[in-house]
Amino acid sequence: MAEAALLEVRDLDAFYGPTQVLHGVGFRLERGRITAILGANGAGKTTTLRAICRMVRASGSIRVDGQDVLGRSTEDVVRLGVAHVPDGRGTFGALSVEENLRLGAHVRHDKAAVAADLQRAYERFPRLAERRRQQAGTLSGGEQQMLAISRALMLRPKLLLLDEPSFGLAPKIVAEIFRILRTINEAEQVSMLLVEQNARLALDLAHDAYLLETGRVQLAGSSAALQADEAVRKAYLGI
Amino acid sequence: MEAFLHQVFSGLANGCIYGSVALALVMIYQATHHLNFAQGEMATFSTFIAWALIQRGWPYWAAFALTVGLSFAAGLLIQRIILRPIERAPVLTNVIVFIGLLVIFNSLAGWLFDHTVKAFPSPFPQNSILATRWFSAHEMGSFLVMMAVLALLYAFFRFTPVGLAMRAAALNPESARLVGIRVSWMLAMGWGLAAAIGAIAGMMVAPSVFLDPNMMAGILLYGFAAALLGGIDNPLAAVAGGLIVGVLENLLGAYVIGTELKLTVALVLIVGTLTLRPNGLFGKQVVTRV
Image 1 (tube, one colour):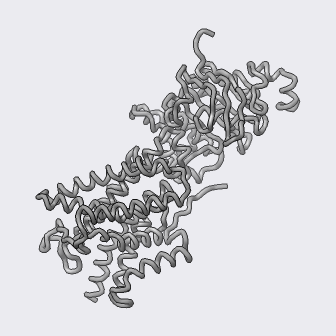
Image 2 (image 1 turned 90 degrees about the vertical axis):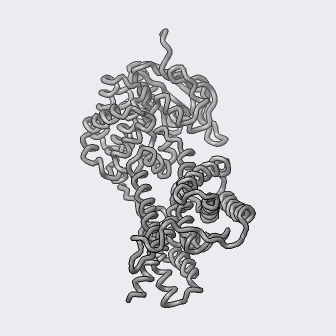
Image 3 (image 1 turned 30 degrees about the vertical axis):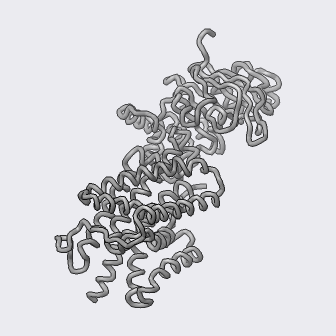
């Protein structure tokens, strides 16, 4: 491919205190695509996302749109157009739904467009519109996840990082959220890096996938290829 | 009855000052979980600056405005230069730095402006329209000023993007960073605002207690009592706590324990709140669903 990847990670080592979690991880995410990172608990999936957002100590190289990430602070990575939906959702429980959404657009200055995006968020998830004045902490888990995703989209991100969006939610809600993620990707060309323990869900949504094991990339390919892979089927799809 | 009401109203006027000091404390506490012991001395120093400006012939309100501006800048710089490097240090490190700041500002005030007690002018003339049966003009005036400050702060935090970002940074710094908020600068803004509020409180209280380097020492204690009584994590409750402390202090002073023991009221309230209701009277509980 001649065009540079939207996200390019090379030789990434990451640490929690003295413990090394990622060992020379490398992968790329092409523009407009959804890429999944699969792996068991403790494989380093969340750490990979946190390294991209500069929330863990890391070395190697991460580039978003050709721009170096590791030399920047978390706040400045956001300004490159990277929105993160963290595990645990990271909503501001004491603030209202609308305030949470407004915060998602904190770095933007195009007021009119922000107001329009706010309306679109409410159209996308009507339940958020009903609860716009309510404290985010009083929402159900599914609603909080919708809020977290909507807040991330308020940035108009180039790259959306999703950490276990299915975690702790009822299958019906998960299906709704994944359907909307697909729509967003198709309609607005938002590229996504998706971390999931539920490999079946992730491979259904993603175009490409990487398999992490104990902090190393073990397998890479299209979702179809990984779905067909014997080892993946046994270990992660239970077939 | 007349005397009683007078005590209540002048208690409310004092309570406004305590509430403002409490508000300044809460503002920094919410963002950092530290109590700034130097808040009072910073306010005193600001008041001295206003005094010096007025001595040089500045009109009162010009001196007032410049003092508030300078105090904001100074608060911001103190956070940037002194506290930022120890953001991740243990609590005790911060406490020691706060005590250091307290001594520095106290000594600086003594050195630059000496220790003699000075009269500080009130901007509200004795016989103005503000004077009523129960309020002196200055009591009424400072009450109005403090209420205006509160209204402005409320509007700032409620309706402006920067205010919202400051609240977010205080509530959840990690999530705030993830939406691009420069959390460290929000802390600095909080320090600036706290210093500015303290300056206004200092200038409002100085005409009644007179200005000297230890002017705010007792008032800071009442401020602590107010913040704790209302609830240290809730700005509006801290202000309400201030009003309660002000009235209580005046009534107990007038009818029960005498004026000499008034300061004990603050201490009793602090110890009492911490043992009986650590979250304060209006201590806010964040609602969460499991």
